[in-house]
Length: 303
Image (cartoon, rainbow, N blue to C red; front, side, top):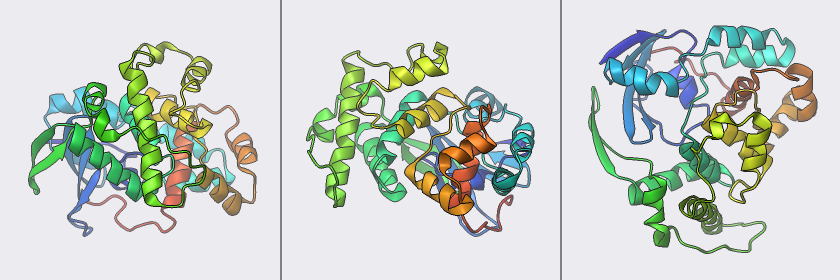
């Protein structure tokens, strides 16, 4: 068990911010809310009371893995203040979403999550991620205080996925506007299939020195691959997988919500409030959280 005080971090808000498909919420009444946070093949039990985090890990595990993953090294007080200084709507978003952290996922995990969320509702993308983990990953167990022995499955590696390509299936359906869930699932798995094949054949390595590329080079490199179908997907991988916090992944959902809420075109909104800000990635998460959670829950900072 490891306990630490972290200001400007709300586990609950980060859970509801739509970044990952691998977190779970337990004991949902406000006085006993606990979370399991999965990153790759590791699982963390977490609870919170005020700024205090109660984590089911050792001090070494926290600083070796979870400190980076939860982006605790970033000064979110300064991030929040800088975005609130933008005034107007951005000030509203920053105040409302002040506890959200941007997760530093592995490039592989960020790419899988992005592919699964491309055409799917969140509930369906979580189901597909669970299916991939259960059928291609490794079964693990972790003893979590208050939850007992928790069974989970690791995020499958490229090697594990390539060994199960026959299970993922090569369909390449020619459907421009799929109307049923089965077609959506098949198209999504097509993208996963293409991604795994290109990695296995050596055409793409998610961890191969891409961190050394500048933003323009990285964006151009990721644009080359069909399994990242649009600019939103490229930006999302840059933000979550490669830590480019000056990137704003503008989805159709967020664009429509911005235009409805602010009566401004989304491009004008970005240029007016953020322009060349180095905090665009944080701003995108604040904005997304605000629209995903229009009514703020009362357990923002509770145990």
